[in-house]
Length: 80
Image: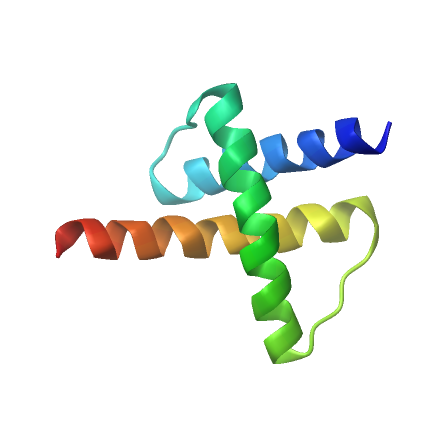
């Protein structure tokens, strides 16, 4: 059951990040991958800043912030 929640959070976070950064999603699998990588990035950044989030909504916020940062970095790298 935990893996389903993990995938759901990844899908929601990836979709939200896609809407924020490009105005669209990346498909189900793309959203999940971006959301999961975003969770790692967001957890790292929140840890550096000293912010702690818990629960389902906190996980979505952390993952979304990380996914937005990930997409922003990818956009910068693609320009170079």
